[in-house]
Length: 141
Image (cartoon, rainbow, N blue to C red; front, top):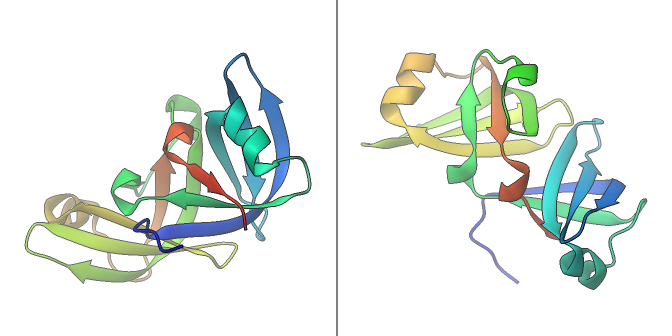
């Protein structure tokens, strides 16, 4: 299967909390970074997700918000990952920013060129990738 999502992060399911319709699934990456996904209970069952199983978090680059400063306690997005900018691909309207996370995984965001410039995003700058749990697609092999 080929997909258009730029971000495919491998992890281990470390928690599944089932609700009436949806479940909250925690994936832990190699560097102990955690990604939270909200998916349907039917999807949890179909994918066979349980604590200890391997899975992937798929996140489109356009769903990722970047910031150079963040107080995670004051935003509603469940996923806030710290990284360092390793690449900036400049476009006429949007820039593609690649962050290397502490796990060594790379996360790509597509943001407006103006936002990229106002944040001062360039190689070596520390930044945060922010995305909602409902924006995470979970996949298994």
